[in-house]
Length: 226
Ligand SMILES: Cc1cc2nc3c(=O)[nH]c(=O)nc-3n(C[C@H](O)[C@H](O)[C@H](O)COP(=O)(O)O)c2cc1C
Image (tube, helix red, strand yellow):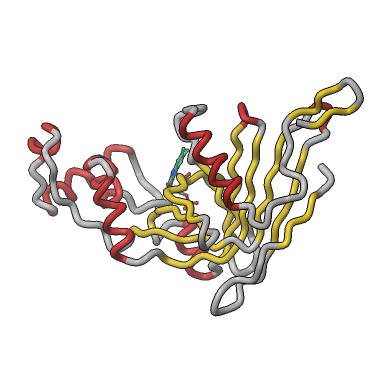
């Protein structure tokens, strides 16, 4: 909490700034989930770009944060618009906005594919409908009608020999991960945390680090004017 004379300008980031932004970022992410502030508190806007630098952005779900390495993971169709952009230009920026908590977190850095084993493990946790949906959709490709998509889903159910009655009953059913579906890890080279304040006196800080091998350099944190 910070005050300006008799005014309380709201909560703030620690002073001095901590060495790494990740414990705070992770606590904000967990806080948003625990308080169920929105149906998808793990939603983030993910920006990618073509090699020519033409940007595109969309919402995806963050499926894990690893404070130790300073990274997050998300999953998608590898042949989608974002999938192709990432293949050709493997960097991204992600932004979370937890409006009712007056918090924003921004991350930037290179992307690498999660291992097949990791993607398989996550895919297996998804509802059977979502697993069939992943098989059925050629994400980002044109579609002549909604009917065609439903037909594609029905075709995949037949091809995969899925026992639909068992799936609907809630029995466990095996559906393999499509080869064109996987996950990415964004290894942060920059993280910015923002806390809303009264009178636009927000609190804002950015941490950067170099990502040289064998391990990343130390984070350097700087407060920024809002
Ligand atoms: C709340 C929400 C969560 C979403 N989660 C994902 C996700 O985790 N992965 C994904 O590929 N698309 C997700 N989408 C759909 C994407 O926003 C987007 O429509 C899709 O990935 C195609 O994007 P692209 O054509 O830029 O590749 C989500 C959309 C919303 C609104």
